[in-house]
Length: 63
Image (tube, rainbow, N blue to C red; front, side, top):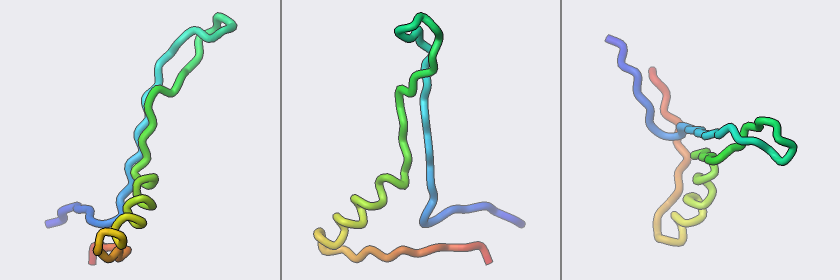
């Protein structure tokens, strides 16, 4: 039985766009939302030691 799982470093990127008329009157795609989970890693890595925790980068693989 093969069961997929994830643990550890995973990355999620999400973007949301809307179509609007620009200053020239042409339709343009405007990005209204952007999220990248990789951008959260550095602040967490900096905060953990200051809070008494230890940051350990671990990669889990399926054997």
